[in-house]
Amino acid sequence: MTKTANDDLAYVRSLAEAGAAAPLLGGRFLVWWGGLVTAAYIGHYLIATGKLGLGMEALGIMWGGFIVLGLGGYFLLAKAFPTNKPGQSSEGNRVSETVWMAAGFVLGSFFIGVSIKSFLIGAASSGYMWSIPLVLGVYGIAQLVSGEIARVGWLKLAGFIAIIFVGLTVLIIDTAELYLAAAFAAACSVLIPGILMLRDEPSGVV
Image (cartoon, rainbow, N blue to C red):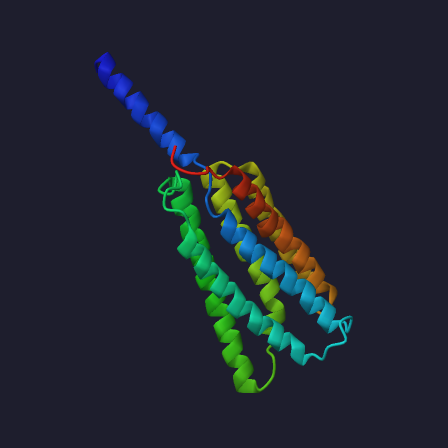
């Protein structure tokens, strides 16, 4: 090969490596869902333990509001997402977007199934309680994959924290403290990483 060809290959390689290491751009979505899930788990604990003086029917209202607010906010954030963000087509961002999309489909399918079963039996299914280890497991996988592809060590750590809490929440599955543990895990594995990702986002075209 000529020196010019070698230089060209080196340049292309450097561009590819820079693209793979581009900052992840999903921080705003992690902050939204992480904050909302954390607040909902805390709210569930406060209602279930009677600390708010509300009946158990308030749980259904709260989680119904969570769905409406969560999806509404998500679609607004997606619509308002800047189109000039550098790195949107990077390998890291494409993989992270795909794995989180898959995570959303898994959780959506699970909760639809649990909701249908609850309707059929006329009472809240125990699947809602067991959803917490599943949710944390999905968070863990998504963060581990995103952190690995983007070469972000603290994001992989967030994934491991979520996975550790899968087992811990199973141990306390029949207690009200389950929801406090879930809130802590969601904050550590989704909310805080989202804030850090927002901090590292480029502001516009470079």
